[in-house]
Length: 394
Image (cartoon, rainbow, N blue to C red; front, side, top):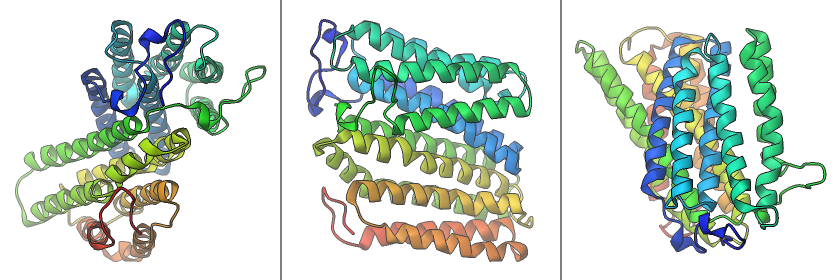
């Protein structure tokens, strides 16, 4: 249940799940993050190394954090109110600057990226506190993160002013502290820590927002596949690779949306502690799913132009690792919501690991086909196992 008591309750959403629909300005805000996903995909393709993959993951964690924390904010505050809407427009501008800085975040645009990132987190939370006042029940929920984000903000900005390993070290420390902070309830001296029961969110809104981000990431993947294919001369290999990439994207969509997404939304909407599910299933578990989509899109970008090229260690990691990450995230998502092991996902990950043995004698297209077949089998298994309903079947 959403709380709207207090002298500044006029900016908060009304109580109840029915009042927590996703608004047009939230969808408008999401458009900026299409750019971010595109930039991350291109960055990964252009930096095919362990270091490049780590840097991409670091940037993804920052991007996902900004978007996800804004989702938590709009779960409480009503975007239909003019001050909240204007704030979201300002957050869009900061997000656009952050997204535009991603390709050179580890080069000349590091400080710009860091300042935009800190402005998003600190500015949004300071607005919430100023709106709530000192004695509102939600004040502590926003005051504790503000302390943490102000502290990590120093690391982000300092990292933006130094080069090389110093920047990476500062930003890794900042990201780690922030994600641990969520798990620890942003424990703060004199303010205590937030418990998941303090997060009086509308669970259905949280679930729908994360579903839309998954759709956004999948849409960017399809867009990149189509643009890439459209620029190439036609050959049997490129056509088959294009078809495989399309089927793979559909399978990723099917695995998430066929039953689990809707059932999960119903479950969190009725949960006694939606905050716990919001933290674990929708804040944490979605990170590997989004990372997997980005990696799969990068794999498709590399395979479609050169389907017959031998698979290297880097391309193998992308082609098989992307779907593997996605399935791990989805397994954690399902286990958190329904407290049972998602055996199709677990077995599929093992099959992808076993497929690494094919890499030395396979082309990129062969490995992509193997990954897509594994995803397709999981999608079919999910479709024909159990029965539909508000509770996810075994």
